[in-house]
Length: 155
Image 1 (cartoon, helix red, strand yellow):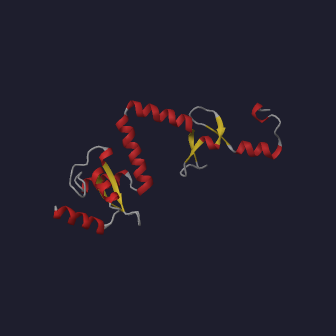
Image 2: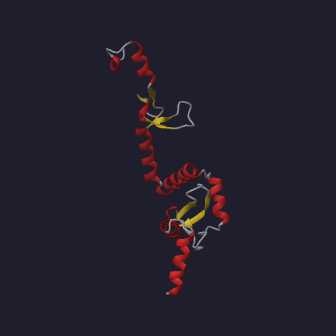
Image 3: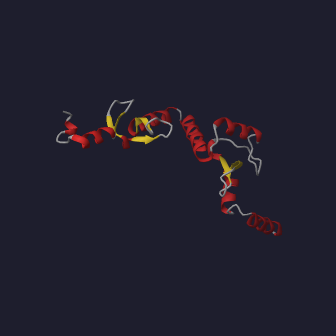
């Protein structure tokens, strides 16, 4: 009998076994909670445990930080806005790698933001960090932006 289940029998033991999963990376049998949620997987959980996944991510991040962060940004755009990498690259090309407001060059992943309507979640375009923050500070309000333009024009 498995030492981890000593003294446990019947339906409780079966229930506990069903809540366990084997990590495909390290081979350890762990509770399902030790695996990240993955709706695309058959059982709804990642095949690697969180610890193995974290170690692999750390190795990738150390080996090629830019590639790692570009991959993270791509996953975030897909999750938050439904933008596949192909659609994102097409949008970037259509905007000639420029901010849709100020036309400054969109270089590096930290200076590139996906602007979207907070009511509809529809993507409006790609912006540089200052323009994206500006819209956020003005709460996406056309009235506030016109008032700011009037204020600057009067100076």
